[in-house]
Length: 64
Image 1 (tube, rainbow, N blue to C red):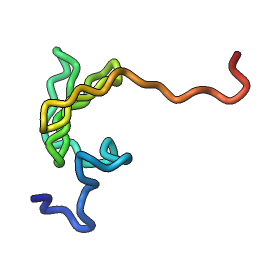
Image 2: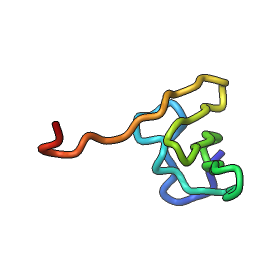
Image 3: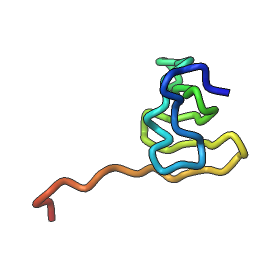
Image 4: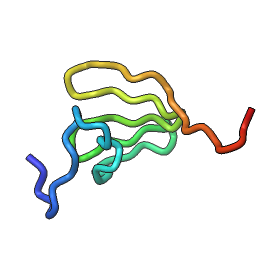
């Protein structure tokens, strides 16, 4: 359970990466979010249920 007010987005919600960071390893390049999601510096994610989300980056406007 998230102790923050307002609560962080759940791991299954689209804005899951907006949850607060509660742990980080700069050397290995990952952060643990309050909702149990692990976010990697290369933008991939690992959800608490073991689901892997491929790296994703926003597209820049006007980029070809």
